[in-house]
Image 1 (cartoon, rainbow over the protein chains, first blue to last red):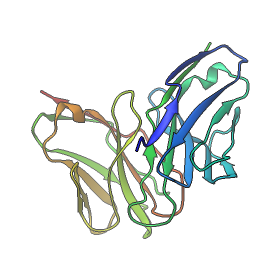
Image 2 (image 1 turned 90 degrees about the vertical axis):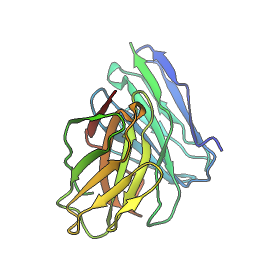
Image 3 (image 1 turned 45 degrees about the vertical axis):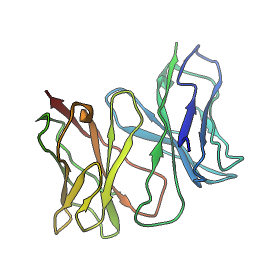
Image 4 (image 1 turned 60 degrees about the vertical axis):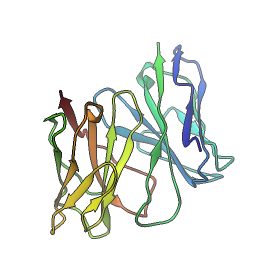
Length: 115
Length: 111
């Protein structure tokens, strides 16, 4: 059981380039999401998915696309990278259902620098 | 989700208990109190959560006041590896995917 796995861990992009951050989980979680964290700040939600084939926008979706073709994978695409997208990106997942014990699990992060 | 207020930073001596407070005066009846921490350069790590009653697990204890307007996370015997930013979050236990992170409390455990 690997939990939430993100790749790559580090990436440097040039302005205007595109790339995909990969996220996979092996816990059969329905819910997955992407956050970004800028220096000295809390995490902000970019996009989320409540199941395969279903995605929606979070707080800061501009410049990012997502898709959810399988339960396991939730890639985040940067369409045309900008320096403002320099950040640490975290993927998270949680099981479906309600109530106690509904914990969100995070990956280890992907450090992205756009120059 | 209700807003939380935490001190910006705290210090604790190694081996002593660390008590981290959190105010959530606008919490509603169906909202849980969650605690996460983030060690430098790592993803947030779940610690504990509760609704009304005090909770304890292998990592920490959570004390929630009777009116639920505040809570305290207790690390009973802090170690240097507990140095991290601790986030108190309140949210509906079932509703959603989203955690609203504030700036949290930087706990520094000193030798």
